[in-house]
Amino acid sequence: MAEETVNQEAAAPETSPAEDTATQPARTFTQAEVDAIIGDRLTRERAKYQDYEDLKQRAAAAETTSAELQTQKAKAAELQAQLDALQKDIEARNARDKVSAETGVPANLLTGQTEEENKALADAILKWRGPQQNYPTVPDGGTVNPFTGGATREQFESWAKANLNL
Image 1 (cartoon, rainbow, N blue to C red):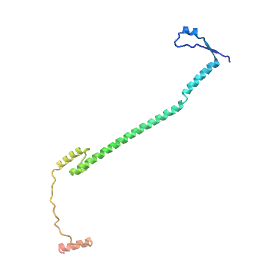
Image 2: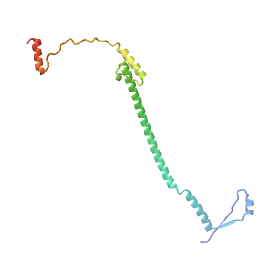
Image 3: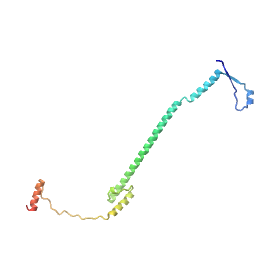
Image 4: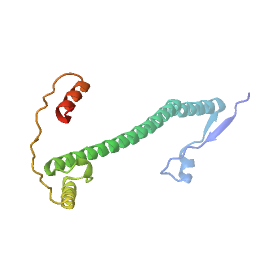
């Protein structure tokens, strides 16, 4: 193959084109020199992107990790909401039990979430119920059963003879 020559004029940034041609001679490159320059430049460019596939895999892994992290965050938020709801229910139940013990109103009739709400409900229930009647305690006026032991039939028979004059 015949060697081809390429003319390249190097220009300094501060000089004008008129001064450039007067002070610097034109340089001629052979095809082998041009190929070497281009090859060197391509090698440097390829070296810049040598780890592209590795970076691509890392980016994919980071996206997967990010998606998993978002899923875990959503799950954690859901579990935290459930925990908060359970704690709220426990506090409400404790408030109902406390008011029930103080007022004597059954806890299942109280539906408030706070102690104040339950006290108001208990007061309303007690007001609706009205004053409680206090019945006197009447002692059992009966006698002690003299019949002990034996079958039920025998006990009935002896009772019938004693009380029915049989």
